[in-house]
Length: 162
Image (tube, rainbow, N blue to C red):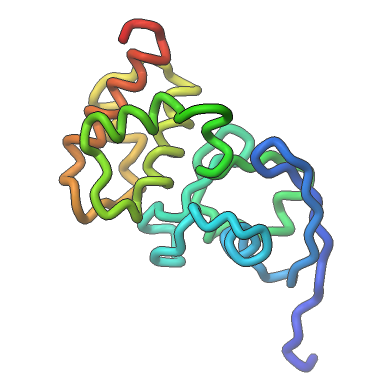
């Protein structure tokens, strides 16, 4: 072998749109999203699944896209921060703004998508359940209080109690 990687063709859905890409067999979903599809809201942080900056929703579950080989998403559904809001801000995005849960913004897309995956599965989480759901997302600016408050506020709005 000369060290070259094979190219593969992958078809999947991103933000409700069918896509087909050609990438190296060792390309990660993060690399494909950012470099080929230009969806740069998904951030490159640690590259080893520890920080959550690259979080996307894959088939309804929050995952670290830096740990997912692009070839493994064949036929699957991916949601990035760019696909969250359709016509207006999503209630989670609005709550993050209202609660001051955004400072530098680097962790925000991943944090919001982790929150969405939680609220899709559990529309009325406790404060502890929110903390567990975002435990894989690191934030160096806010101290998490505003983030947890924003997610709880969004849950009330989504459930029609806000």
